[in-house]
Amino acid sequence: MSTGGAARLSTGVEGLDSILNGGLVAGQTYMVRGDSGTGKTILGEQFLSAGLDAGESVLFVAFEERPETIRRRAATLGIDLSAATFLDLTADPDLFVAEELYTVFGAPDVEGEPVAEEIVAAVERVDPDRVFLDPITRLRQLSPDDHQFHRLVASMMSYLADRETTAMFTTQATIREPDDDLQYLGDGTIELRNTDRGRSLRVTKFRGSDYAVGTHALTIVDGGMRVFPKLVPDAHRQPFVAEQFSAGNEGLDAILGGGIDRGTITLISGPSGVGKSTTTALVLAAIAARGERASAYLFEEPVESYCHRAESIGVQLQEPYEEGQLRLHAIEPLRLSTDEFSTLVRSDVEAHDIQVVVIDGTAGYRLSLHNEDEDLVGELHALCRHLRNVGVTVLLTEELHTVFGEFRASDSRVSYLADTIVFLRYLERAGRMQKAIGVLKRRLGGFDATIRELTIDPDGYHVGDPIEDATAT
Image 1 (cartoon, rainbow, N blue to C red):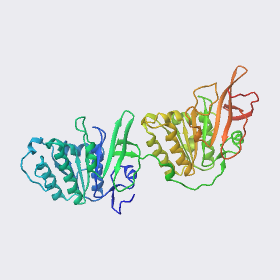
Image 2: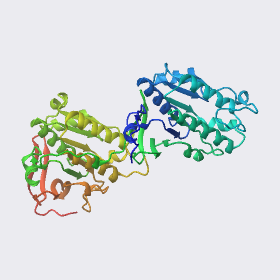
Image 3: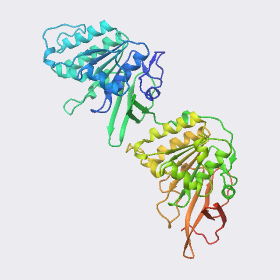
């Protein structure tokens, strides 16, 4: 959908312009809705701040908070509104009520007209490029009924549109006074939510332009609001050379039919302590030895622990990590949404020319699902597919809940994502536990279908002989 060549304006919110396909359409009106505390005012403050940064004139129409309070609170987030013009309409509404007044809106029977007159006078005086009204539902209290309120607000928005002013207004809904009836007044609607699973944003209307549908995570930190657009895998593609590279161990390369296929997804599954993370450490060390770059996202242990365990079997990660060739990230699952994590990975890959990504711990990744409507498979699918489309090799580890028992490649249905599946298991043999390793599938070629002994000790990582009496249970 085209905007007919209309100019785009930045919202001032990192990530939101991308969702809006380039930013707001200049000269249009936008509604920001959400419960108290969701960040509506902060979004408006950043909208005005972006205008100031672009050399525009801006007007803040404040219905609830004094300008000095707004400026001070915005400054604590790093938002500078010192050059913004404010219209303070926070006085008691009884002071604004007058009868038989006529305003430029041409609606003499509308209550609250003195307020409208003040807004018009401020607009005429400032001639703003951007106006923010917070919250516009305050005018409802100044109107005798909903009909007059709608007429007042509709006239105000038409007036601003005629002046080609880009306007944003917030609403404050209550059980007795919902705001659904105001959506028709704007060219776009942005909804904010804040639940115990995190903050989120979605665009439900954007007249004259495409936009990214769905719910997108957001945070409010120093600098204000930041939005993390949901990843669209097929929007990015990059050619790469299809080849195999060494996993860092001759025995592992042998059962993989030559090594790991570039630009594919490998799932490494098994119960706790069987060697999944150690297997990824081998690959990372091999990547560094070839002079390439890799990133690992550790959901289940600190970086120091990961490096120490690798070094205990002679795999050196500390030096390439300190030199920046390996980027190791300890991820606290409950602090990140999946959208935040996807943005982190994508930015890391693009900024540092990353060829291999390790996600160590899909169980930890699952804890990052802040939205109850999300699912592990869908979110992980989008991230992995994006990485594969740009030629990045992905290694996932998944912990199985059972040590012995029925054979499963995955407990969480992520196995279908994988081009290659490497399974690590415990077997009981002659009263002793024996580690075993095998390859369940390799989509791009042949592999060794035997189940082999696996030994991980101070002497290294050893893939041994086939286990003749191994079974699936």
